[in-house]
Length: 265
Image 1 (cartoon, rainbow, N blue to C red):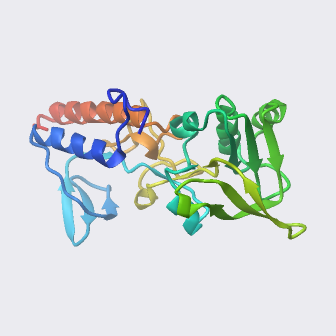
Image 2: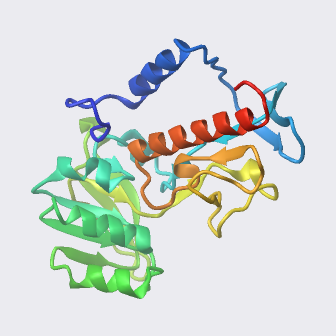
């Protein structure tokens, strides 16, 4: 991670998480690792199913994030962090002066491509269909940018080169002609959206059309005592620092909520 304040030389995500966990532990926070498979928010205390255990809680902060949509190629997964990325604002700088590719046809892809023109000499936007799902204004902005070229009716079949631990080219196939060829590039950015990790709350909390939790006043859900922060409810910024900020807001609201009930956090 190169864009989290306080680390001029960057820091690995797992190391940052461990540092935060250790720091929180100094103040009495308890940590439990497990998969939350179900939740009952119909009455308080709320119930969370974590593995074989059930946790009862008076308040709940949902900070489960969102997972990037990937193509599902083994080579793609092997090269994440080595030229394959789903975050242009995180990794675009590292490909300054190079030619790169963006995959997708919606607003996310257009946003990624437009942002990446700040660094790349050329951005090739590759889309599997012959029409875009992007809004008219976003598509027009991309089409007017001289650095962006479009490649339609095309899918990615492989990402090279795992053996070199860096992206050197993409194996492409045209869906209409069947033509297969290698396309040299220094990076592949996925712009096919994210999946909010909120499925277990379906029917209990308000969600938008893509499954993001809907909040008011930044972190409030429609269930009193339940708050949501970070990428599970933020479809716009999706940055570690903005997620951390909204997490702080949610924690302060929990403290106030319990205090108003006459209970200690």
